[in-house]
Each structure stands twice: as C-alpha cells, then as structure tokens.
Length: 600
Image 1 (tube, rainbow, N blue to C red):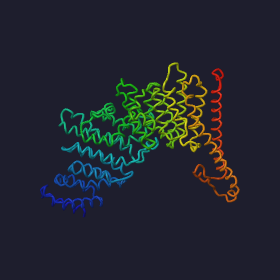
Image 2: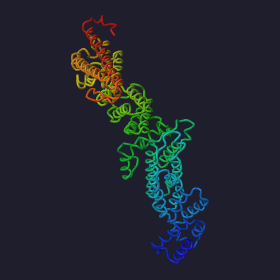
Image 3: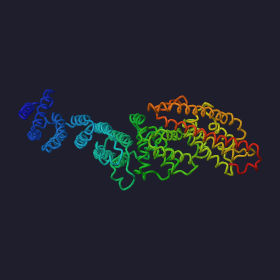
Image 4: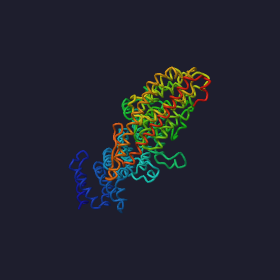
C-alpha cells in the first residue's frame, strides 16, 4: 500500500515542471517514503529512486528520506537489510540537491547525544564530504559550517584521560578524530592545489575556515588530551596522531606553527581578516598554549623550529602560554603548563636569566601560578613537581631577579609553608653572597635589610596565629640565627647589627609575648579536655574544642588531646630556637671577633 501511494504521488509530480512542485507535494512524498521504510519495502524504494524518470523528483524531494534511512542504520545494526539502507543513502547523496542535503545531514549530526554522537558522525562524514564537494558555490562557507557543526558535537564528548580509556574509546572520540582528518584532507589539498588557479578571495575564505577549525581542535580535544610517552607507543596514540595532522594542516595552508607561535600577541597578526582577529581575541589563547605544548613538550614537528633561537627567547614566548595553562583548574591542563615551563627552563643556564624579564607580566604571574598548584592541588605528585619547578625557576634568575621574585612571593603567597620556602632561598643567596669575593649588593647591606623587613616580623604582632604561621616563623628564626653566626658586628656585611633594635621590637619581643599567650591558651584547653574526658567516655560522644577562636572538628577526646599536645610541642620548638637566637645575639654583642669564631 505504501509503495503504491508513493508511486501515485511520483506519477502526479512527473507531469509537473520543477518550479511547480508545491509544499504539499514534498510533505506527501516524505510521508509515503517514510511508510515504505517503516514497512520494509526498501528494495522497491531503491528501484523508484534509481528510475531515471524520477530523477528531477528525487533531486528535489529525495533529501527528506535521508533522515529515516540514517535512523534505520543507527537503530537496526543487525538488520539484514542494512546493505539496502547503505545503497539507498549512497543513491540519495548522489542524486539529491546538494544544498538541501548539506543542511539535512548537519541537522542529523546535531540531533544525538552521548555515545550516539560519534556513531552518527562516523556514519555521515563520508556522505557529507561528497555533498560538499558537489557544491559549486560558497564551498568555503559550507566547509566552515560543516566543520563547526562537527566540532561542536565532538566537544560534547568526554576526552579520554588514561591509556586504557584511549584504547577502549567508549565514546568514540578517538575514532571521530581520525575520521575527521580524512574528511578535512581534500579541502586542505584544494587550498594547496588552487593557490595559483582559483579565485583568490574564495581560496582565502577556505583557508580561513580551515584555520578556525585547526584552532578549535587545538583547544578541544587537544588542550585537555593526555598523550602516551614519546616512544614506540606514540605512533599508536590516536590523539597524538590527530595533533600531528592538525599541525600539518596549519603548515599546508600557509600558517606554519613557528610563525603562529612567534607572532601571537603582537600587534601585527599573521592573518589579515578582521573577522578572524575578533575570533582570536576571544578564543585563541588556549589554542596557542596547546600548540606550544604539542611542539615543545611533545616534540611534534619541532624540527621545523629555527635552531638559532636562544633558550631565553623561547622561554619568553612560552611564558604567556604557561600562564594560560596555570590559570585553568583542570589537572590535565595546568599540568601541561608545569611541563612546558620545565622544558623551557632546562635549556637555560643557572643564574643567567636576566632580571629585566620580570618586567614582563607573565614572568611574575607564572611563579604565582605555581604557588597555587603547590598549595591547592589535591594531587601530591603535581604539588611536588610545581615546587621543584619554582626552585628551578629561582635558580635560573640572576641575583636581582631572585631578589625581585622573593619580594613578590613574600607579598602575595599568603601561605606559611611557601613563605618558609622563600626564606630558605633567601638564606641560601645570602650564604652565596658572603662567600663571594666580589660584592653582591642584592643580598647584603641596605637591599637585604629591605628584604628582611618582610621576613623578620609578625603580621599581627603578638596576636599572630603562631600555629598557622609556624613554618614561616621557624624559617625566619633559622635565618636570623644564621645571620648572627655568620656576620660579625664589626664587619656588618648584611647590615643586621644596625637593624638589631628594630628586629627585636618587631619580631623577637612580640614572638615572646605570643608564645606565652598561645601556650597558656593551649594548656588551659588541655586541662579542660582532660577534666571533661571522663564524662565524654561515659556517653561515648564526640566533643569539640575551641582553639584560636575556631572550633576543632568533632573528634574523640584522645585525638583532641593529641592535637593540642602537638601544638604545644610546636610552641616549645619555636621557643627553644628563639632562646638560642637571643643567646647568640648576647654572646656576639659582648664578645671580641676572635671569641666569635666557632659559635654555632
């Protein structure tokens, strides 16, 4: 019945001119064709489509059947009629109006979600490529529309993180990336082959669309993608292969990555279209950072880089990209920033990175980004690597650069452990300066005193939370102890002895007072906790203790006592070092230079 109904509609339309087809005819054709598919009359439908007499009708109306055929292919994967569905799809792609087909195929690609996204993309990429190649006008626009639609759908798929996830490829992203490269290649080749023959404006438009696609791909999935280690396995890494092809496309269409990387951020762009410059301002930072990582860390096409570029020049251009990585919160992304920084720093000799580089914003924001990773990242290996990279960065700077960075981090880190790390580095630099025969003004004399003003003080005087700031306080005391031992009052190379009164008033005396207050408070809490422990044990309830104005989370009494005793131990440790420092100061101020030898 459905076949007869379709033949009747076709017979009526055969006597009409193409321009006389009505909207009603399209609707009736679609309904009858859909019924033929639903009732399984595929072979008869294929015969109708192949009939030369129906050529005009199929050209105008046949695209309406693509959706039902595609859905049958997706839903009926074991159907014995699948070969007829594929034949029918091929015929419709061959015979239908390519403009209508293009829009119809893109609508089908936009429909699904989840794992069906990759299924329909893999099914329709080849037909979509064929349809676009049949278009005579506005091909660049059509390519751009198709690539944008495909990318938008692929960006919804989760990027596989581990090697196992990449191999299983549950959501089909890796398969789609490989297929997308094959889909794009003919259009890249068209740009290459038509550089001399085609209309220049159309060729430039096609290049522009391909360039946008490459940038989008660098951002997603490649920004968050993880790659196999560079070994024999690297050739089997589908995402790495995708990255390599994308970088190859950039070079092929006239935008080799060295030019892309080294012109990014400059006033003069590597592209000419105003439309694309606007695109760059909004979306390009992540893409360029991803490109830099792929080239410098993964080594993809790195042989194209000029060998004459100095390590500091390369680091300067990569620091902006490293900053972009470190601003992200995804571990898979900011870890790339740490890797890219390591790659740049290992090329540079110690103490050779000029302090003038710190006038560039990213040279200060990157170490601040490392501090955030060190203090906030839940993954221990990344925290440790970020700490190692901060130390490596410090090692590469010249003396004035180290001095400037120390001041910056002491003012911005707001973390006792980080401040202790910086203070230890200050001590190391003072030690190097005192051992050198030539004068280093940045870690001796007035410059050092200015730096010590940020170290040897308590932020809130005697009321400073000594437990929270214990790392910083211990590091400061150890630094002061070192200075007292190494620098004699007569030599006063560091300037310590002229500032001793200020240090005592701003640091040592408030610390004494704070220790007495803190110890008294914690001893009282221990006493209260012990007095209440019997009642708590009887009820077997959890109890709470307020320390420093904040309530310790509910825990068993024995655990609370352990915490309180640990705090007291910390205060005792600080007090013992403080006493030793004051003892050394007294000895030094009353002894002759000869008597000071051997004091530790």
